[in-house]
Each structure stands twice: as structure tokens, then as C-alpha cells.
Length: 473
Image: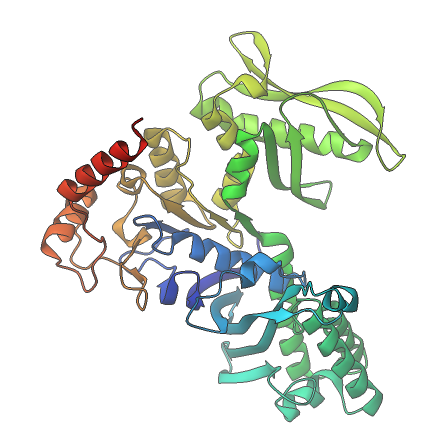
């Protein structure tokens, strides 16, 4: 049984990609479900991938990892920085925390590389700054209103001063060290709040203040968010589909064995054998066996397995194992590379869907979940997860058919208004056909925002003809 549940509740996005402002509540306001599912539907270029990228940025921040430059390249052209804000609900027994985390992201000239600047080839990096962590708390005995725990928009390591002294004490040497670590986090494109340096400072100080209940409560919030970012939050973006098309299967997994937790992603070549470390062989086998329990039911008779082709010397000089993923159906064995794109897509994410179904604190965000998967099968999977699952699934889709199988409260739509990119439909009843309702709104505009920018068929046909005339000899 899970002692603590961490759930992403709301998100705010400002000036990122084509989203000047967007806000989404991930909970179903129509009905009460254990699972939290959100399917985002809309036309191309309307902010669907921006949502998944925002969740990916959250994972990087919470896990203390550097933010790649391409995220800051996606800042809206009208702004110098993007702003992200997230709300979490953390529940443990009778304790409930509402936690807010926000930060800004900008593109910064990398002045640490003097050689490139001297040669007239300046390089840039992402800069994560102005972080703020706040929370409210209640249990059976007390209720504390929302207050700021850490705000890095300060000349000091962080403010407010009262929280600073509770978390790290009053030692001057500590103050100097944290200012240095704050600057280092900034120039290395990492979160300072969730950096190992600040967390270790707070942890070490708490050892001498074990009776300080307020410090213990603050540290509890930080530790739960760090654990969530590192072990319970997964993001699958379109690069995964791209790898599959290049015959590389990104096998993503999270499972436990013998009281040990295993998670990660193993890129397995489908063009031929892949060499992996010795200790990964059993993990891949376990993941395949676990997936086969479900895979054989959703694709009747199909299972996958690992063929061990023996020892092989790895590039780092260590001994590894050469393996190849195989497909088994109707007593026939073939390499998995010859299965359809849809089968390979299902295999690449199935283990995470299993975890979402069974674990309340798991969040999986998937861009273009419908890509390559038969719409009827996907609809059935979504229906099962939304009605009987426990975790959180966030996904984008270009296909309305799978979304029609789940409760309307699980579905959100993008709009044509960059200043209000995400909405839920009003007045949608259970007996309404979602597809008809959406197309009717395109024609009649019954919602608060326009969801589709109309095109002119005559103008499109004319453009095709003009383009054709230009290429004729």
C-alpha cells in the first residue's frame, strides 16, 4: 500500500512556444475517479506539445538535471522568458499539502566558454531562474495557510529570511557556500531549489534539529517532490516515435524486484543485436515477462522475449551481453523489428501503462499517444485505465475516437487563442457524441473560445493548382 500520494493537479504556461497563456486542471470536475486522465485534442500548432514539454521541464527541474538549450529556443518571440507554474497535491494519511512550484526560463549567452566568444562564435545555454516554492498544509489538528518556503529571487541564496534560518541555520560559511551553489546552478542550467547541494545542506542541518517539527515538515515536502521527479514522473515525447521509425526501440520501464526499484529507458536496436551491461539482461527479461501478461490480452497470442546471443566486449572495455528482442506468435519466432510500427509503439510504453494502472503516485505524459496505435484498441485501453486505474496519465491526440471512450471530464481542447490555449467544453453530456459536438462548435462557435481556425477549400484547391503550374516543365 502506498503511504504517500503525489499528484500533479494544475499547470500554468506563459510565453512558451505558441502558448502566450495556458492553464489546465488535470482533475475530472464532473465525476470522482481514482485515476487522473487528461487527453488534449486540437489542431496542429495549437499548443499540445507545449504541454508535454512543460511537464518534461518539470521533471528536469525536480531531478536536478540541466535544461537543454532547445527548450529556451522555444520561448515565445514576444517575450524574453517563459514562466511555468505547477500545483501538486501531496497526501499522506490525514496530512494534505497543496504545493506550488514555479520558475522562469530564458536563453542566456554562455560566457563560460571564452574560446567561442573570442572566435566570434558565441554559444548559448538555458537559464532557469526566479524559482519559488510555496505550500499550505492541513491535518486533523491544524491548518496552515499558503506561504512561501523558498524564493530564489533574492540577493541572498533565497528568501524569506525566517524560512532560510529554519532550513539551513545562521552560519555565515553556509550562506557563502549556498550563494556560490546558486550561481553554479544558474550557469549549468539547473534548478537551485532541487539541486543536490541545497538539499544536502538542508538534510545535514536537519540532523542537528531533529525535534524541529516545522523543519521536518518543510523537508518532507522537498523530499517528496524530489522522489516524484526522479522516480514517479515519466515523459514520452515524439522523439520516441522517431526512434522507432529508425528501428530503435526505447524500452521505458519502472518496476520493483526483491525490494529494489528499477526504472529508466533502454534504447534497443531493432536492426540487429544490442549490447547491454551484464546486469541489465535480467531487467530486460523481467520487463518483457511483465508486459507479456497484458500484451497477450490486447494483441491475442502475441508475446515478446529476449534472445541472449552471448558475451560481447563493450566500448568502455567492460563485458556486456548481446541481445535481440523477439516476437512470438502462433509458435513462430521472428525479430521484433518485423512487427508493425503500432506493435513496437505499444511495447515501448506498455510497462508504464501497467504502472499507471496500479500506482497512485505515478504520472506518465505522452505526446501523440494515438500515433501508430489502432484507434479502437487505444480507446479500450484508455477506458480501462480511466475507470479502474489509480495513477495519472496525460497525453495528446490527433484522433477523437479514443477520447470518445472516456468520460468527458477527462478531455480538454486547444483553442486558436494564444492567450487562452486550453479549455474544457461546457454543456457536454454523457449521451453527446464528442466528435459531433466538436464539429458543431467549429460551425456554431458555442464555446468561450474558437477551437479551430477555418480553412477555405476553394483557396486550398487554387493553391494546389498554382503550385502545380510552377513545377510543370
